[in-house]
Length: 381
Ligand SMILES: Cc1ncc(COP(=O)(O)O)c(C=O)c1O
Image (tube, rainbow, N blue to C red; front, side, top):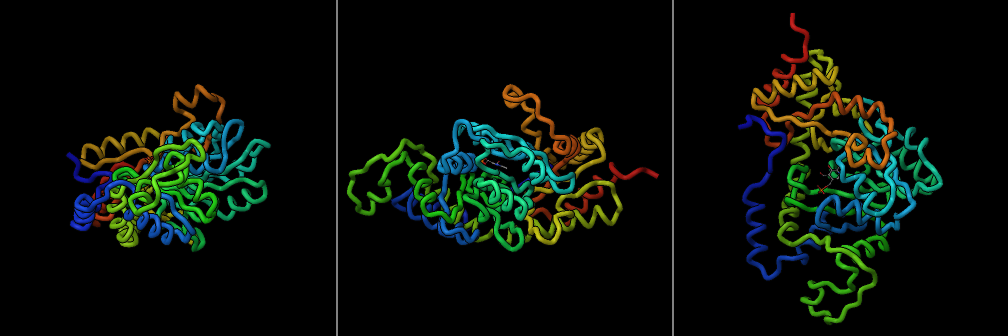
């Protein structure tokens, strides 16, 4: 149906071989491949440890929970994100305090708006590296330090992204990643928490697996079967089948991200050379930020123009999406708090359209999408 879908899987024989090898091995649940995936992922971010979990939502929830965030606490996060960011806070029993974005060209959490919303109950700052564009980490780290807040990064879009040369996911107490099917690397479902705090890593590993002191893999390696439960936890483990996929995908990540960056640059050049009025966040990231180019967002002149463009592209077989309907406009959130005012987020969300971006998209396809977009957005002479 689609000539160009929003995202595609970037699998070849290596992923298939890795999964088959695992199925043919004696171990399919969390075991040696999961441990190897964790080690390789920690190396990617420079964090001392990485803890694999069943998805990105579990990563966010478990990180906040292991940091002791709970009832009565407030966590600052953007409204322009996937609903999981705020839901993870709510499931800890805490309150997400929604913060505006900086601007239409920098759709990441606004440090000034965040600062103005800090109260005696604020415990953590939860920025999202939207589209793989690092949030303003210098300002956010200062803010977290000055107010004694935990910094937890929602890095679901940002494996391999860097701010001032430092990897996203390595700035604060914890970094949370998703390996859902549309992400820069995928394990179908899967997630990872990075941290350089060994105590936190220990707590995460415990809570990930029912608070048990011994895992099945430990027992298979010969550890005694006796175990204790130190606190009531969850089953948020990642299995070795998914970890095998993750190991191959992680090896490909630098090449996949280079492919994304090259195509994003082609979109940027195509649009700017034609002098169109679209706002291009990935063209405005600046030199400090090395984005992971997870998606390619454009901001149209109005919501009507955005909707018309989406319709025209659909007719031409080009799939688009909207990232994101803001959290404060969802019914479930309005029930909690109907008085949130986030003007920049609202303007962005009403005018944003996401165009296809994945490493195997061809330059010719990008050129076609640019031409189709320009036909709709440039004034006709
Ligand atoms: C910004 C953001 N945060 C969190 C998540 C949740 O990740 P998962 O779908 O793996 O639970 C996603 C994934 O869709 C996301 O895009």
